[in-house]
Amino acid sequence: MCFDTVEDGEKFYTSYARVAGFGVQKSTTKYRKGTKELIKRDMVCAKEGFKNTDVDKQIRIRNRGHIRVGCKARIQFWKTEDGKWIVHDFFEGHVHVLSTPRKTHLLRSHREVTGTQKSLIHSFREANVGPSQTMTILGMDSGGYDRVGCTERDIRNYQGRIQNEIREYDAQMFINSFKEKAEMNHSFYFAYEVDEDNRLTHCFWTDGGVILPIS
Image (cartoon, rainbow, N blue to C red; front, side, top):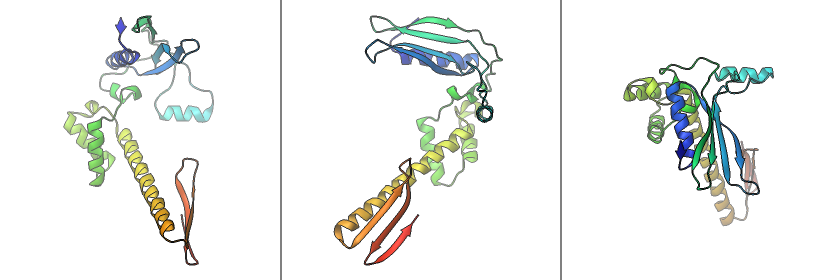
């Protein structure tokens, strides 16, 4: 089997995994010696390997419903001299029960918030429609929750990212306005602090001897 790009091969295996009832993830890679040219890509079952023995990590893995059991199912792609990608190795044996068609959409590698859904989530958020109601609407529109392509948690996470982006934008607008004031008024001074993620945490400004802290 041959593909024009490694991405085409990855999409093929992901689609196959969705039909078969298991999740996938990228594994080892190999680059041509002395260059950054990718020449080998492995994809494995999401239950490849074994769970970490650290207790805290076990808890986090269990909460995600993603416990590794040493599954050996995988596919390996190699790049040929003419730039194509071929299947060099393929093993389909699984050591765990595969998901049913009604549950496969819950596997992480098969979940995606599409561009259309993102637009709808933006609109619903502005109308104060929460994740649960949004999921209900998407389920009705798609003909069932198993056809939505994402979960309520994915919607909640995406809404959280929207909120963070808005906060970052508002914070930058706030700082920019202070910079403009400082340029127009030499008695105006301000300073601010950001955290390790470059998010605004504290700010204070003074104008004519009055200092106001903001946090």
